[in-house]
Amino acid sequence: MKKIYVIVAILFATLLGSTVVKAQMSGPDCPDGSWTKPTNCWETEMTFPNNVVCSLYICYCYKVVDGVTQYFITACSFGSACANGIEDFSTILDAAALQLVKDNPPGFSCPPCPTSGNYTEVKFYPCYREVSDSVSQTSTLEPCSGTGTCTKTYSVCCIISTGVRVVNLINSSSTATCTGGSECFSMCR
Image: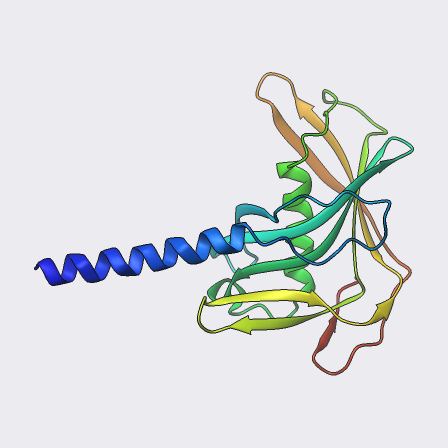
């Protein structure tokens, strides 16, 4: 019986260790010097489009331009099991964008609902490729070559009594062209 406990303890420590490493990854650089890059990627738990709950590591940059909060997703990692059954990786990036706005890791202020005119934009590269790591059982969406960006625009306000952020997608736009190889997926839709 002691052997089982030791094996379970070692397995748990290994899993915990890989989680800590992932949470501390810093991700790719920002598109240019006008963005602020957090020290570590943002770790959040979310329900994926296939109804599987997983940890998600969103590597991002942020800035505020003319009162509009902007995020730029540079990479995104998740458990390989989370992606099973998902044919279009843009679905994962869309979910990550929404979760980033909801979680608000930089702590931007949030006006009370109902409010209009408070927007947050999430930008990302036009194409990414999936890089799988069989040891850590993770997949990472890393940028491929392309031009332009994909942009999701959200309205954001907070319910004062509960502090819940109300986030609604109001627009998707693209100035992007994916020029990567066959391993690259177009992310704009």
